[in-house]
Image (cartoon, rainbow, N blue to C red; front, top):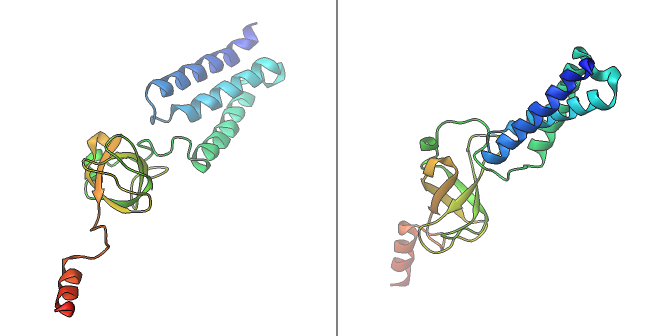
Length: 170
């Protein structure tokens, strides 16, 4: 049983990290948690793999695969991911709506947001913003849920275009 202590420790560590991720989503403990858990289980199920070097290689390989899957399939659909520049840096960023934004729900993708993905949960203070519409962040709200507003008028024209149109009609 002494040769099984390291794999068991990896399993426990992996489970603890994944529970931490469940309690604080977006912290990205899940990638290393999965790597530790799988490497530990491999060591427990296949005793020849219970050596420190084999377990280290297993953690690296499984961690790389888990990270690839995490990024490739956008697991969290944009919950304050990756590189952080501070939530205040999100104010004024532009993007577009990927899931209709209301006062209670919605998702946006920022043009130059930080992280593995730049998708965020979003709310608006007035009405609804339809999918595909351009937005601007008015309040980063700590980075977890952004407050956004439409970037321009609904008709896609600015004040100058409207004035020119009025002059043409008169």
